[in-house]
Figure 1 (cartoon, rainbow, N blue to C red):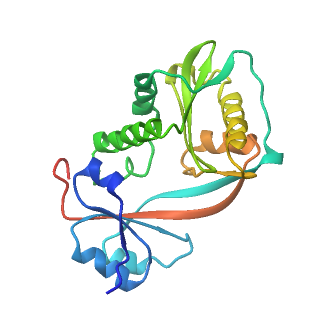
Figure 2: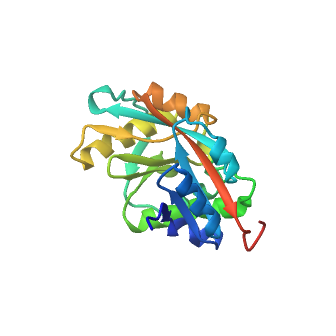
Figure 3: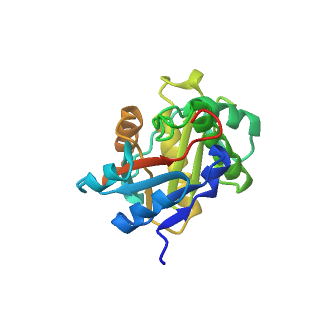
Length: 229
């Protein structure tokens, strides 16, 4: 029998329960989520009829928009004191991570305790540090944030709370994206942002990104979490 459940071990380590992403929205795929204990993710076109999803216990958690930027469209913003660095204190990056990402889809999932959602980001960034996919964003010599990437994808843009609102976001993003382009043999960068995060969405648009695809994200918990579920 064909399986439509793709394991996501990077999530399982945080939630201590089997985790999967469904590769199809067919009823057969949805039925398989009833036969396995675990936490499930399903991403669909926003125009999809969700009657079957509700029948099988899936619930809406977020929408993700895909901003895209061609190299020729990138709008560069200069600011004195802003620089990039591949040398940084790992603990500083993890400290910023722990408080910078509070609105992700797992934070919005009422079945996931906030501390587990926080740990997911921290463990993800630990992995990215090990794979050398983090660029530190510095202002006047101090770490103010970081830029995380993989291939042509911008994975995360995190800023220390004490540096927000100081006109650093545009120069950080444009400088990070310019560096990113220099590291890859592609002419396009992509990322994903929830429309609930309007400041981030506006930041990317003002830096030359155009909105392309949109997906709705649904979750399901079949069983219970060892803690807080």
